[in-house]
Length: 263
Length: 286
Image 1 (cartoon, each protein chain N blue to C red):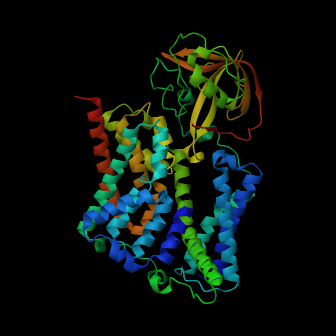
Image 2 (tube, each protein chain N blue to C red; image 1 turned 135 degrees about the vertical axis):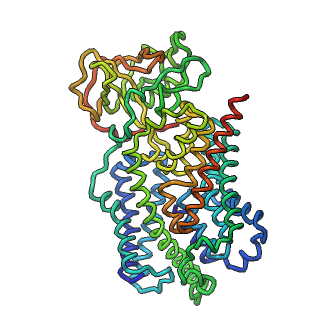
């Protein structure tokens, strides 16, 4: 590779490292990756930046390159393509995955359901892929309240794993994206959140049925909202869907950690 | 990926061809088995396995063994196996079945390549400066020990940087295809086939290919499918997703060539499908 190509390669690797640090420092890395990977991602940024710095130094000092030589066109195409996401990452403000990332899945099929019987493994109404909601049987006695107030979807899922349908009636606050469906009455919508293990590539949507006291058509799809109300069990087509009887729905900012951990 | 490119750089700098020749079994089956099981001690994901695999080939590891390593390593490594166990709540049967199905594909393709002869597949070899690695492996090591170590480290990072840029090209290209398919292909239609013995397996396999999820995370996605798909389908999803996927397919095409990639697809898809269906039959009883 020519000296210019090696400078380009070094610049790309250094830029990739700097991009990671920019995203980490601005708290934007969580739009792409689970916070549990912050440490290893920072290390990756450090290694990439070091590699890039060394490559630039080697090219600058004209240290002989024993790597296989690419043709100039090959090098330009390679560096150009790799530079695309780097430039986009440096210039564009990232945002969390929205309802357009559902891949055509009807939102009514994303709503979590209580398990129909103790010990059953089914956790969701259909094909959605949220974290398991281990729940007790329908009609089970009221479960003790949560140790701390349910402040978001993650807290709610943790509580449901312990309390199941016995937790119905507990006060709940949850943030998520509004997703309307033709299958639902006008005072209902699905509150969508994504659960991730590693990154947005493995994001799995899950939904909570929100039942509002009045029409919700004024809330645009893909709008972040905060719903305050009580946990409810909504019987639909033989399933008991996890719902929130809303007392208040207000628009909200995108949370700093928009995804919830899948496990 | 970084672990893979640094492992590749270490192989390039430190491993000599004579050592490979001395330790590599001469018979097909042990060579392929060794290649398949090497992943157990090389914790690399799918994009890390490719640079390491092609460097091992350049050092004289037979193509059949290297192919087996490429196909098996993303799954048969401690991190992926542990992630699978966690995702399926410690269900050891799922972990063993996943490992077994992956091993069958890697071993099957490897043995077929060994039988047919790798020459006919026209596997591209690494460019001349790397083939001459044994002559050039050591940098001009003169001066004191500190200077030698420093030069060797700079050389190691140089190899890794070159490899990294090469691999990144295909990772970015594959990520573009994957992002497009994840956004545009409606998964809900495919999920409707979930309850069928054969249909569920057939439905989930292309989903795995399109999603191209990293081997260390795919078990968690597969776990989510477990409520609506058969066990055979979920295992087929986890097996084929690491053998034939959009992102890694481009890397394998670049490393092994189009003919060998075609062979991998033609062998692995039917094999995994049959294994998934048979498993469903066994699990559902007579």
